[in-house]
Length: 169
Image: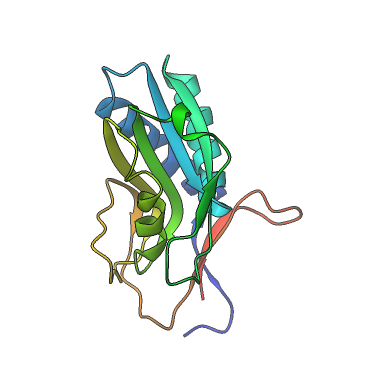
């Protein structure tokens, strides 16, 4: 393992991945008027914000941005959202996170929506590490990469005095 983090995606490449995912989301939802981007706090929410911006640029979709707060270390689903359930009822929901590792975070994110009727649920991750222990599939992925368990993928976005990037350490 390297002593210093290895840059996997730079700022431009991150935006290219987000742009491509936005077009895929648009294509998957051509007949929709509104979708819900549910970003998992905090880096998944940052990815969702960028997706929202690009989708607003390329489509007429109304994009509702939802923040999901999870207690990721808890063995039971403990979650909250910044919008009432009535806002996402009977809509397309797209759960967004930065990195898929074990699948726990996306599984917990999915759990937020299981008791509410919806049209469909999709998942977005910027980086899929392929170490799933939960039965989670990603619908839209920026980069799929094989890593060893000891390695760490860190997504840096919108951090003051730091350049956006995806790093492997």
